[in-house]
Image (cartoon, rainbow, N blue to C red):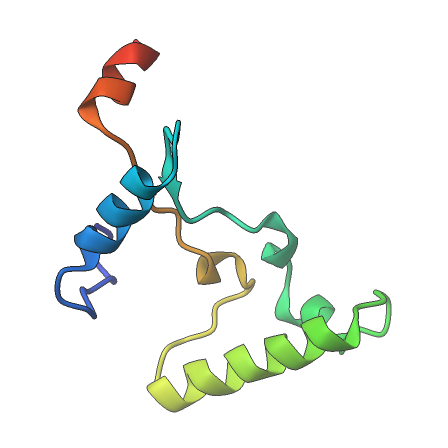
Length: 98
């Protein structure tokens, strides 16, 4: 776990275990890295005037910026840190991967 992360929900691991075992032939459960957010905030909000960004993405970017500001968290240069990467697998699957 990263040093700036903290556990927000009790029994959070149970959700991964339940998801993993509820799907036949599931080998990996988790979150993913959304590379489309790995760009400067000025591009995401359309403030640079150079890049065409969807209204939905502009609104989401504005929401994230405002939420980070309210929480006292520096937004950083890009939004790449907004997506976490968390994976869960079983020992059996891990061993099969070599």
